[in-house]
Image 1 (cartoon, rainbow, N blue to C red):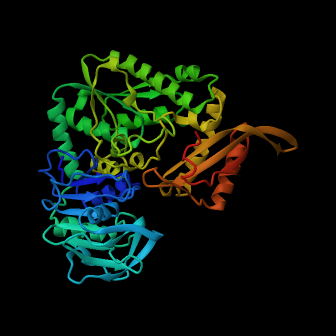
Image 2: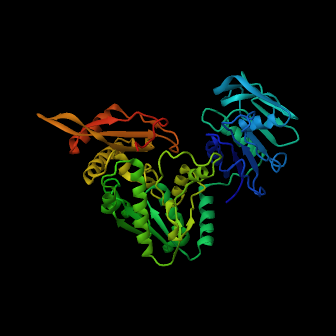
Length: 509
């Protein structure tokens, strides 16, 4: 893979956004913790220092070793990075009288600076810091100011080093992407050659070399990531790829057969394993969400292992791991606190003795979809909403029974098909229904009922890290609620979840 831009992570929530903006410029980049800089920098064309929740004035301030970078490679320091260069290179950083957070506008831009080509005065930028640069570092020249921040941007003469106290990567910095492009393309002269076509060609060649004539097993989920990984591997090794699609009894209505039919039409070597009864038997009586997840993960491994043993001489396990998972595992602070366990084949035990291959491990979700389109995968499949690995088990609050699964499958089907028929499905990032552990009083005809309550959930997001609830039309909600109550026996009340993430998660468990 082309190592064009190195991004150093100091623990900022925005670090992944920097990478996404750089990738949007068709420039490949990688994120590394500030204290684990690659030993060989020869293939990198530029370096970006990210932001941080720390203060450069604090005893716990991150201190990167820039001896092989500064003055030797084009360097862009963002927010904490800009303050770090100032504080430790002859300038001064002090606490601001007021926290500088939110929208600001550039009130001054130095004329003739390539970094600000195409950027007009008054351009909006996004601030997020409680410290401010009071004096520039040695040999620095001011490039831009806002009304409240005199040194919003500067460069160091004699070096290709630029620094900005705002975040160009966030949506609210209106010309932020342009500034990144000016630095990377015009100043650092980084090639813009990271395209879906280029990725496919390079990855297929890499997989052919790595795998040779070895056999590979892949656990398909029906989702975007595992599907794109399967098609890439199929392109590289053909029938040496063995795909296993396990029905855990918690898929959506008719999904097991529908997905199998779809895969067969794609020429993949897929075996469907219907283990629904086994999963539901193991889950009987379990209500705790973490125990549900772990039980499903354990049974999946057992089923997958049983099936793998039926294949001879398999040497590799393929996974649909994507870049956010990789970044999380090597982040500055280490893996985040466990909000909930993630259901991934990555938990396979050592006794399976398989080497791992992850063809998508350097891609973000939107890039996976673009690669899938390049591979000719059906747009309907690529546009599928994310669906949790534990399936409907974490949308059934409380214990799980076959009857509850049936009810939720029927409710979910009415909701999802309704979104599609109203032209709303592609405007929603993820949607689903939740079966609540409460009954409510209702009236149907002349009879009193005491039946289940379901909640509908639909969110907008780009990567699932944050999400807003979708303002679905009232007419649609009225229609779908009416359809659910009339068509699904056992449900007499429908509610709509209007919580955003944070503080709520997308799933209820």
